[in-house]
Length: 248
Length: 248
DNA sequence: TGGGAGGGTTGATCTGGGTCAATGCGCCGA
DNA sequence: TCGGCGCATTGACCCAGATCAACCCTCCCA
Image (cartoon, rainbow over all chains, first blue to last red; front, side, top):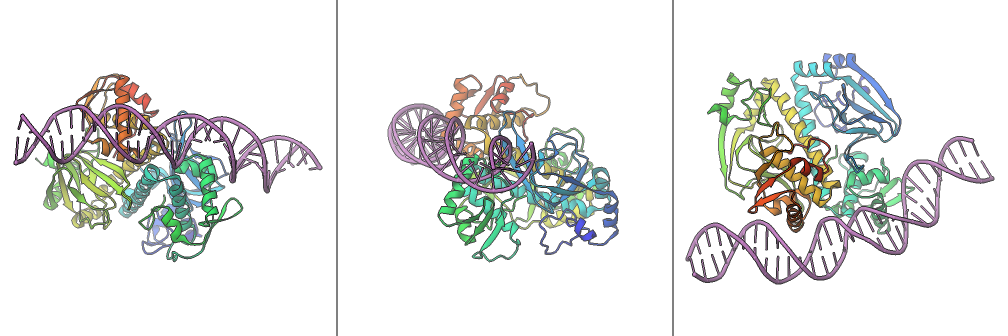
């Protein structure tokens, strides 16, 4: 039970299938027990807003199940997604008052939260928590900057391929997938959400997905289930030299 | 002397004209002395590369004077700037082996560096350093995400206005400038570098700057010196509701 | 059992910004 | 004093992706 609830805290720093571990608490120590005291769960329905940008946010936590998005909106309604939260991802800004972005549940969502004040106090007394959070934040910064390249310089086709690659990689048991393997996964986002992520319109997203399908780079079962017969070919389309940016 | 060399470490956490302080070492304590032992300076000429992406980077540090840029490059040569380093900004990734981006001196540059290993050791023994770095990294993450909105959703005109606003705000004694004030500053970037930052071509940058000038939103003395007669009007053009994103 | 809402696709047309190319303007070194 | 080089501007043209609009599918509920 502990293990599952604290998926983001309960793993040692070694090799771990869960990408974001907020705190390496060296499982089973009394730190975990202290966390137990200040934790609680929150559930959201698809479409519900977790916090609005600027709102006071008095917790930190992690996604247990479901998907949430971080978005920014201009007053005229243009929106840009700036992050995607998948299970085990951390949310929250220790030391900050308000939320910086709208956090919206894209599917039904369960979060495991910790009250911020006591969590911050724990940070003071347990130095490796701050160090762990620093590592995680550096990961997110890398992902955000990787995304800046996507947004600023890639074509629509490359953007779509990049997004599929990221979701596919992350979904399909991240580690050690051989690049030529056949990969199947579900898109956790509507075409519109994908467009908001990629700085495109939903029509362009739809057209480009159709094009990739027509050319055999991907196959579709229904609207959401995607099969990638040759992952390395997809990476080429993404213009990705690196092994692909992690996405927050 | 200490004060100046350690501009990024030597200020208390209170109100401070220097935006990025890596460490609040509560001036004059022995922590500063320990930093003194592991510090050294490096100078670079305009155009020189500080580190290449992927290279081993065995130091952290801060910019003393001059400007540097963080850029990512695709194999076909397309480049995207992902950060701008101005005096007092921190560079480096404690706990990471390699550099994640190319760091290039845009002007003559002096950096105050600390050897990474001992710096990391200090982090372990001095908890508030990690906490300070976490705050800084959160700032950079905010800036990066703000920039994602600029790259993904703003028009060329808005992008230029956003960049001018950010540089102007930061240059012209950041704090408490009344928004209607007349502001003068120098662009630290060529048109091409601006284009790389904004995800545009240099021709578009040039045209949009000319347009803003034609319409009286800005005045130019030479190519680089910019006068903004009414800052709030510039912010409007930037489509900026917020008080404007900080730029890393 | 039917209609309507939410998501998705596709077509026709328009346009912002990219591309290519010529020209201008200091500044520096011979 | 004259190139020449690096940076910037401007013009002409083009195209990727936005916009506007029609239509499809499927699930749900009256």
